[in-house]
Length: 134
Image (cartoon, rainbow, N blue to C red; front, top):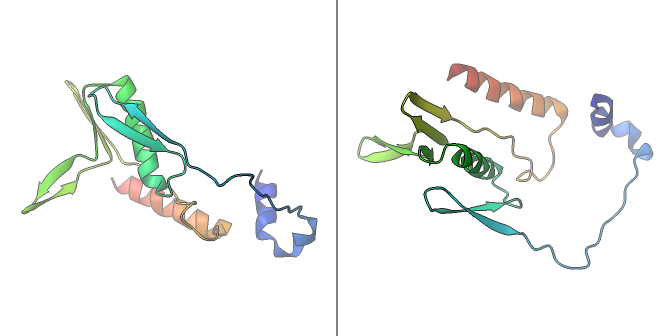
């Protein structure tokens, strides 16, 4: 797989690429789906959402809500001075303790051009460093 991915970084091998142009018979229409949580709240899942971080948080909430219905909170807020701030992405509470889930994603859809492998490696390393500090 690595050899295949490395080909995309090699500008000299462009002649070996097969390219074609796709045309759609109809305009692309995103599909919006809602799921109902165990707390009777509606939450939208949109696979076309360019905010991949929010999309990932919503999916994590949906998956944990299905397994642990009465103690899952998405983006819980805590006081900070006269305002509030987000504590974490997902908070699971239980009689024996709490679990905080912090979701991280490397945005691909928001980028005009995909980064090279060195940039992706740097981004992943930065996320891992932040994770170790938690």
